[in-house]
Amino acid sequence: MGDLLLDDPAPFVRRLTLNRPEARNALSTALLGEIADALDAAAADDAIRTVVITGGPKVFAAGADIKELATRDVPGALLDTRVGHWSRVRRFPKPLLAAVAGFALGGGCELAMHADIVVAGEDAKFGQPEINLGIVPGAGGTQRLARLAGAQIAMKLVLSGEFLDAAEAKQCGLIAEIASDPAARALDLAVKIAAKPPLAARLAKELVLAARDAPLDVGLAFERKAFAALFATADFKEGVGAFLEKRKPNFAGK
Ligand code: DAK
Image (tube, rainbow, N blue to C red; front, side, top):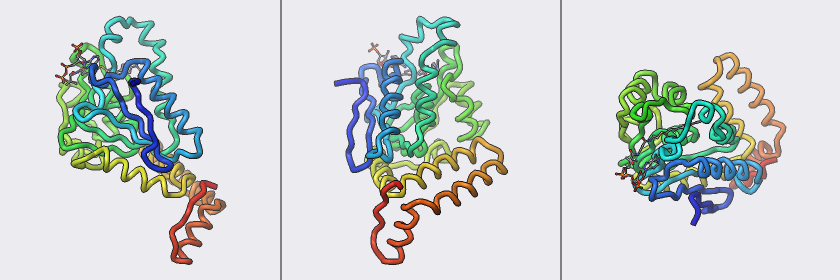
């Protein structure tokens, strides 16, 4: 079996399962490349509307592969192919969910933060312990953690290497939900989202990301345009028609 397992557990839903238990799902460059390739493929496939990424029952991902990092020098870090892999993960345009059980550390926490919705198990632990290795987070950890959880929590994690448990992660807004079975709950949400009109879902994702990253005026202008554009879609007619005819909508993504 490979380090990344792909399956489609429900119509329109693809699941990516990290499968390097012997290395605690450490994100080797090869594995990160496989994740980026899988997301690119899902982005290009009309039969996929949402993606769920998950790990094992005890570890989501323990970060970059420290054995690989051990040989890194400055030019190697600057020219690292990982940078391109991470930007492909970041550009994935469809709703991306993460189901986190156990440890999500370093690059593993950064991977979870690339998801649009994170569902965590009660035993989940989030951290950016790179400081213990003499480095800092390199895949957006300092920036995303500060934006999602606030500067105080980001400072605490990045400077001390301490972890947040699931309840703390929920309280500071790092995750959406805690569930007894995070994989099942994330799949449940993915199925629900996959039944929504895909064009509206993609724009909704972009808009909420803009709320985090762009000034309010820019975000509001973008929302007005996206809102108007969606009136031109067949899915809008289908949604309204289904409501008026008291039936379930069937969205085609057109
Ligand atoms: N890399 C490689 N191997 C790992 C690993 C990792 N991150 N984490 C665990 N392993 C391996 C261990 O070496 C051990 O291997 P063997 O000795 O059996 O050969 C095996 O997995 C089991 O590990 P443990 O015995 O430690 O397992 P436990 O269940 O007791 O503990 C743990 C699980 C996840 C709490 C612990 O393993 C742990 O603390 N792991 C390290 C976590 C960590 O420090 N993560 C930060 C890594 S640095 C970049 C962008 C981003 C990054 C880099 C570059 N660019 C854009 C250039 C990111 C950097 C990082 O994430």
